[in-house]
Image 1 (cartoon, rainbow, N blue to C red):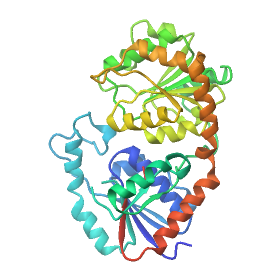
Image 2 (image 1 turned 90 degrees about the horizontal axis):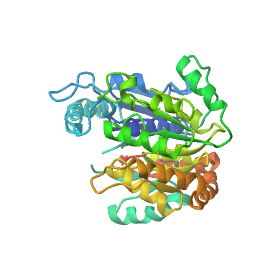
Image 3 (image 1 turned 90 degrees about the vertical axis):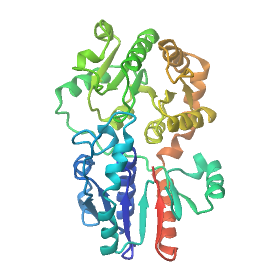
Image 4 (image 1 turned 180 degrees about the vertical axis):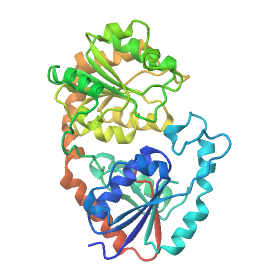
Length: 376
């Protein structure tokens, strides 16, 4: 079906880019298209495993990466650096351009799909059923083809055996909770919460008095797990919720019968993962692009947004108030109904496959060498 087509993937060094690029690579490879996925050695090791039956079609190519002054040792993605130091990562990334140029010269490609500055066509991780009102506007603004490639919703194939005793304990607690009673709190692996932000979220959860599961990575400023939380908060949550420090199987949690609401940072990938399970959404955007996605959800009646101050800070009362709205007020019921209404759009694999087929047909029918951008 791929007719010998070769597509080169060049995502930006952030897992919010690399993971969707990998999902798209897998989807294209299933149609027989050969993929070269370029990223650094450390990032290749951290990516999910490629399905064994597709390894012959997806080539993970190591992109040379030279550390520079100002970049922490071993840092090869935004998750490894502090906010405000992206410029050093970009400089180091740009040093790999000669290798990329030589690779393109040696390996003839039909398309280059990348994350950054200038392109001949734009591929957008959306569908007309949800974000169609913006597709025409983007085409008009950029004067290039704008193709929706589907939402690329990740699928929970099966539960894995639990070997981590800490996660086993958390899962046991979750299994004991009533249906759709728990708030899942998660701000992603790349969101670096400050001490004040962690404390305000903790106080907000405490004030709300609702059961919760908070997946929290130890912040850079914390010397140990206990240092991350407020004095006394640990004893309070023993009867009300769980703070799980470290990695969690997010899809497994979102699919769990006890989860009914999600408090998160409103990155587009997290939105797709969450809405496909019909949760009521409480959004706390912590960056400009997240604010746009949060506003999009609120305008569509799919989310309640935590009130944010002019300086970007937020207060525990705003956290608690938003949770109460989502759990006990009519506004929350309206959001749950709307979420259930749009859930089929996010979870319908046949719908998304039809978009992918149209995208593949576009790639195969276009003349000449093109490049496209940004499936995230």
